[in-house]
Amino acid sequence: MRKHIILFFSALLFLSACQQSDYNKGVIPRDEMVRLLIDVHTIDGALVIQPNLDSLYTQGTGRYMYLFKQYHTDSAQFKKSVKYYSTHPDVMLKMYDEITKRLQTKIDSINAIFKKQNELQSKRQEDKRKRDEKLRKDSVLIKAKENALKIKKDSIDKAKSVKPKEKHQKKSKKKLKKTPTKTNALP
Image 1 (cartoon, rainbow, N blue to C red):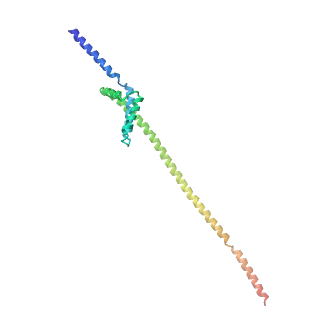
Image 2: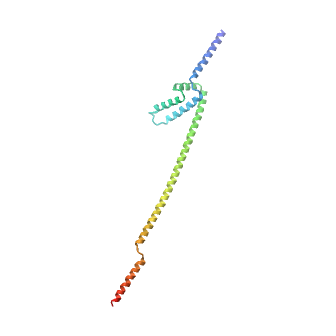
Image 3: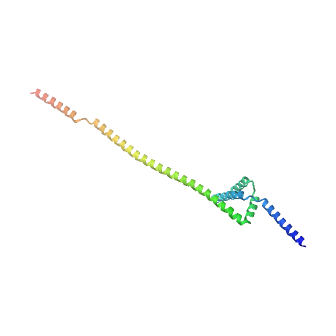
């Protein structure tokens, strides 16, 4: 009897071990699952912020299928892997700690890029503002110089059109001299 009990428990242990390995057979390895989940969560985030909800199903399905194709898996194997890892919460927690760190690193790098772009854009705007201000000042100075030249030219033209007083006085003296000579000849 003792042999039968030992044999029974040995067979039970052997069968349970075989069943566990069959269950692990279709599960995605841990490191690959971490990378896959990072990409899945990235797609989830992209789909959530998408304004057009009508195309969410078609675009989301296409993106997930492309992702599964990249990792040489399918949705059934992915679901089986998620189910397996969720029955092992200690492994799942470690995986999600790593996923969180990697996603945070991605977010930080994207934020750094946006920060650089914003700094460059604000610098460009400041440079443009300074350039425009300089052009405005220059245009005001140029306009003032043009106006001054115009006024100067007008005054020169006016001066040319006006005869000098000396010439007027000489003519009037000549007329005066001629007039008295004629009057002197008569008496």
